[in-house]
Image (tube, rainbow, N blue to C red; front, side):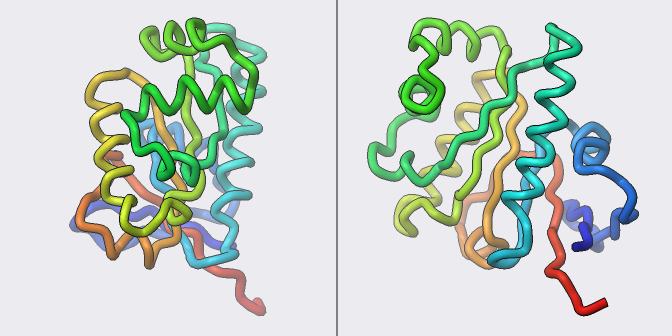
Length: 172
């Protein structure tokens, strides 16, 4: 599996095979869009990043708490992302809603949002808008995963500094 850095208005830049996803994340603004074909390893890559972030947070209590969530349930309610996060974190992690609100206000979490392409097609642009509005109000680092073809068909784009493109496995 190869990774290319995808920056707006520039050619894709291959990332050395020995560079970890954590290092890529650190070097590219600590917010990232992970794109790739179906079954190319987007979710696995995000989970590898989550594992590194969890280890770092255990060692350094000032680091934000990484939380992995699936965006597919956002499409059902289509509410502001902060409201959805409070409820989703309560449901997935059993964290009290008031504590989650405090974490969001103080930037104590890092969001790893999988499955933008799993949001109902009619609601994906709205989901991107909700993420962008959230990022405009909260100092929270965000990682989002999506199939590249689904992402490129959207009218809206995420306000994230960089993207990586996961290359499918080859025979070599």
